[in-house]
Each structure stands twice: as C-alpha cells, then as structure tokens.
Length: 90
Image (cartoon, rainbow, N blue to C red):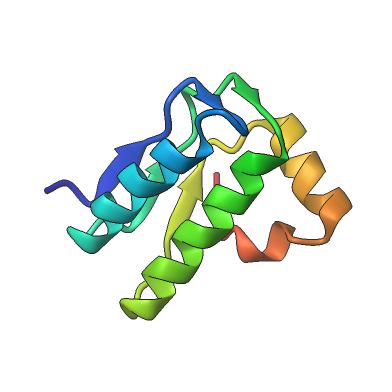
C-alpha cells in the first residue's frame, strides 16, 4: 500500500460516507499523505471527512499530511476555525 492516496473529484454530503470509509482503509494500511489535487466539487462535508481522517491517523500515531488543498476549501476551514487541524502541506 502506498503512503499516499488521492481524494476523488467530488467530496460532498452525498459522497462523504464512501470517501470516509475509503480513506480510513488507506490510513489503516499505512497511508500518511492525502492529495486533494483532484478535488473540484466539495462542501463542508469534505472538512468533516478530512478531520476524521486526521483523527484516525493520529490514533495510529502518525500525522496525515494534506497536499494541494483547494483554496476555497482552505478558506472554509479558516472560517470554521479548523484549518490548524488539517496539517496542510504545500
């Protein structure tokens, strides 16, 4: 299993449960980096999924690094006051 996985193009309320499960499986297999470059459509559910993934990684003793977070999603994270939880890397 790769230490890096990518988010799909859409992460919203309709796709959050599936995305959450897929990411948790990646993290359980040792992934420590999620690439958000493909992400073009999202809502606040994306933040909930990213934070849940962070929590799961932390429980395994690792930090999940977030790459290529879309600017609009980063702004939403700042608005909600959760940007520090995302461990975004450029």
